[in-house]
Image 1: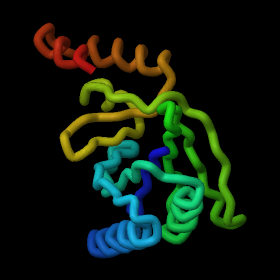
Image 2 (image 1 turned 90 degrees about the vertical axis):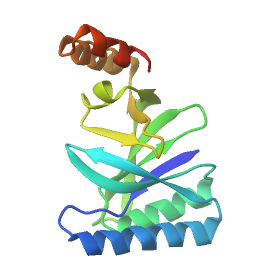
Image 3 (image 1 turned 180 degrees about the horizontal axis):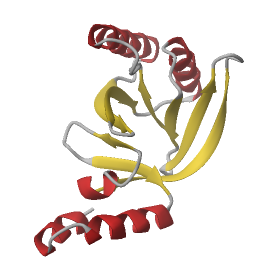
Length: 158
């Protein structure tokens, strides 16, 4: 499985977010040795430093929950080996979480990604969203309706 996690908080200053991100990455990597890949997460227009952990197991998932609670995250994204995405919403007061199947984790064009409230961009500039096929098709139509003919071809590649 893959886990996408962040230590970013909009209410923190830049230095605090940087320290928290480094601490999250170091703690996770040192406990599990899986390595984490820096990615950029977007939520409702806000950019945040995030990490994707490939090859995670149940122990890594438990660490991700612990760290997400420690850094006061609202949620993390867990992607199963079949690319099915689960939104894990944290309940801080109870120190627990709930899960919700939100569709497939899939690569899309930047124009399509921008149609969603949240998406991820990897180090190669590839855009990913977690959504149903129907939501992706709706986003593709919305993106295409705002583009010129030349720009439409760029949307269609994903």
